[in-house]
Length: 444
Image (cartoon, rainbow, N blue to C red):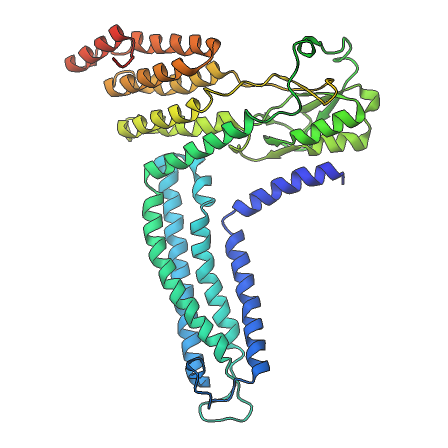
């Protein structure tokens, strides 16, 4: 396996593993089992089976230790089952209320993972400590009570009660739409920070920016095809630049993050093809991570789309929750407003010596903004509150966007105001919409 293949895809696999619902509980459970063996061994080395020790840690006899550990273990597995049921119910509620694309946020919730892991870890810890207790009450021959381990099990039980109280508060907070929107906005801003500040190399100078692709690029290049079906989740930009500079290649990325590709579809075009060996092809293919779903890490369009989808669902007749749509518009303004001071990178990326190495697709700020707000306006044109918030948010973004994006956003704002209303609009809403059209949606 090629080195870059391992680094890029293993890193992506570790990210998926670390954000899965079962990984943290499994690690905590294995750690608890290991801790039980360690403390039992410590008790054995210190010979704490003697019952004449006056310390508060050593008050358990064999029967008392068994009873204590049994009660803790049985109660922990019962509560763990309850927590799992509540979590599944929350996921079902989130899927029906907020849309299936938001389930990943609940699955990646570290607090839920730690809570479930705490009870499973306590259960397994007590179970493994229980098997080490030997003898009966009053019998000193061949009896053993790991007092330190039992006392630590009691402390774990007390900590589990505190964790249960926290879980009740956390699960009630996490299913609120305000909390979910805040997380979606944070991930959207993180996607902006990741996509726009980074470069796959140095930005072009004025002279370098005029360098065209080689004339025979299309005929003398090798296509790097996908080895599986799915969505492009991330691209190892540093890996591509390193390979291209080391081997004097020019690479054109054909599938940006968020695009669905089928097996055999072109991911990268490498020029010249005579310098691309089979081993190098594997390295280039390994720089592209393909998965079964889209992720917001490098896919800014998907990060924005999740907020838009939530707004659309809230405006549907079945839910009819325009207040949530207003929150979504505010959060969209937050994410897209973060782009206002960012320089849109050039599609051409150069190495240290100024040679063109990577050609990639870049976002059109005006296009991505207009598509997001137009998708919401499509469902809320008869609601004066929605139209007002859309116009105000677009006017705010328009002030800070560069010229090309400013023109596109201004055109959308005018179209929204011009087409708002309709025969079903009430008279008092019609007056509000007319005032908006006169003011252009801008705050006085």
